Length: 176
Image (tube, rainbow, N blue to C red):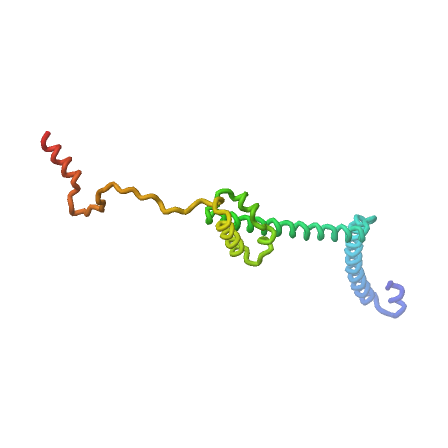
């Protein structure tokens, strides 16, 4: 919009000035928006240039490879944890059965079958019990402890009673 066009319409000078002022204010707002959009476009263009020459399919392949590696490592860790738990149960059962040599005992057991068992603890215990019956020399004998008798009767002295030893010591001190 320009002044000649408005004068051709027959508007007075004050009206033309007001219309042109409002129009230029509106144009200024639109110019600021356009500059902001241009700045954003330039920034995005610069960021997009960073991806020039990048093969998206190669990136997808690399992501798939990393996912597969992660799954494999996760499965390996799960296997290691299961093996550690199995070895702990096996060691505890051998110890409770008082096995002399845990490695020798483990060599005599069917470890693969015991690892695949659903109820490992009970199956390990039954396998060790079978070994105790067939190869008792691999386990320490469980004999009751030896009791030694001194021939005297022993009892706890009551607080009200006088200890005979203390009484003898007291008599010895009086004689001095």
